[in-house]
Image 1 (cartoon, one colour):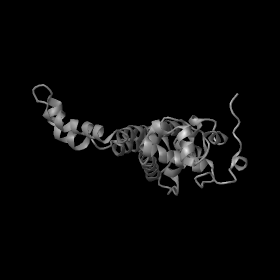
Image 2 (cartoon, one colour):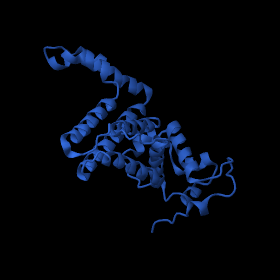
Image 3 (tube, one colour):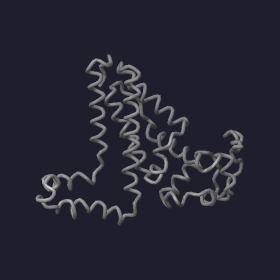
Length: 240
């Protein structure tokens, strides 16, 4: 049987821990984010987290059923940070662009957490609020709901997939990341036209672009496709 998690109001620690912190879900999540940044995914354990909080590791299970539930809460916190302070402008294309970039940047600010959580679905408050907001922006175009959901899926998965991809690069040791980035110049740029004519023809462009994220370009392509759907009469909205 799964462990019972005590409601937040009942489980809040009334006395500070040895480290002077009053425990709450938010305190635990923020500490876990800091540990991920400092020690990586392998460094986030209940024992180490308890030590960082100045509490017995077993105390964590009053707030989360296990480390996996904590992982979901970390992902939900990243979504919350992405959308904190955002309000729709009524221009649907601009709003989607802003939301996509906010999600991408929030995850990249915490690369280890992004790799850990970008593929998860938490069903928690921030995630649900974000999904409601994105669907609301898309439905404001007048697109039929099947088209709304099709674009919504592509939009969200694209932002999270690029966040995970680029975060994985940022999470590499610095030397390994530098070696990867150097390959475009040290290998691809030196391939002869006789054997690799297409790479040779575009080598300078590849060197200039391939170490930068393709997310802004991919996002604009997706938004262009969504705008075409509205223009083609599949939706009656005029925003953007």
